[in-house]
Image 1 (tube, rainbow, N blue to C red):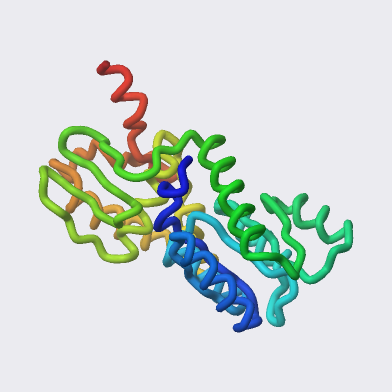
Image 2: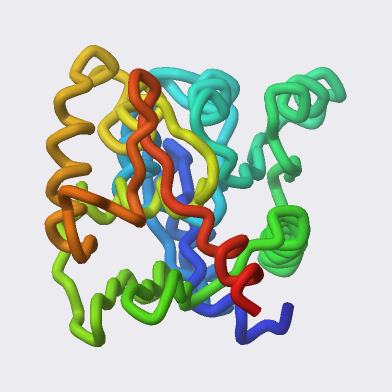
Length: 243
């Protein structure tokens, strides 16, 4: 992956020290990244749903809930890469973070060059392991989308999606071919406090089908797995089969 391919990748910085957040933001933006900020654990979870970052820089020591607890919540429903930031250098903290699912660990103070290098390295590893296509996705000749640009096109026309519809589509497509349960979708798109509101999922799936499907009553993109949840069509396998 070249340096240009990192441009506009979204990084969520979570730290209760505003000066540290500004320092990180300036250096990441200098290297072409987009930066979102959160100063508390709950704010981080909200931003994670709203901005759909490509990577999270997560401070360990925060007042409302520490970084380990935030990481545990993230890993319940999200595999976004996480780099832990801490002023501590103890081996136990590094091991605990990695055991909870952190992808890397950087000890403060660190240089801007070191931080950017770690961010790029983790993104390279993550992209390689997922085998994800970054940029435009062509589901078929009717439907294509570009999550970097936050654009969805149907029959050559740009379709306007509301933020919640966009987040729902993002998570369905990122797990194409796999069934997401109602609980998983609620946690990823709306948050943990909505786990007992399955009608939200049905409602917004219907909204998406009205905008994307040629025949919403007989969908071919967003498929229902009765009693379980929903699955986005495995477009990569279908496209290979046609070749």
